[in-house]
Image (cartoon, rainbow, N blue to C red):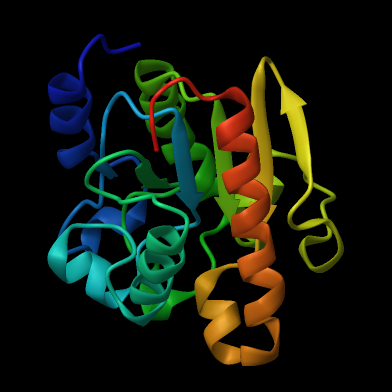
Length: 190
């Protein structure tokens, strides 16, 4: 357990636990308010994220930012965004189980430092790792569950919504559900 973001970021930036370190341009540690009550977790960086060193900055990130804005959330003000793995899997493939296992302690440490009241898992991979290994994202997105005092919800991944625009309304409904939960349990003004 690291007691500061600076130490954790430094360790993470120099990580060579798995082969993803050999092809990365940047470690994508996370971005946002380190005291946020709401934390978003994705699966791993894509090409733009690897190049810029920040999660969700490509097309999917732009959609995420728009939906966040619509419910008064902002990646630089009142939420924190991280990923299961901190380095880009080649050709944007899903992170392998062993890659996730090598990296998960960084995410656990981030979560312990942030102490969020709500965790939102963006997509199937994150939801399976964080909420339930048997989750069916297309059926169970938008439903809160409580785990160790933290409310958790899976949402459709913004990239999946871009691939299937028919899911846009469903995805936005999940953001409205999140907004209601924030009003219910969070103390900071959003």
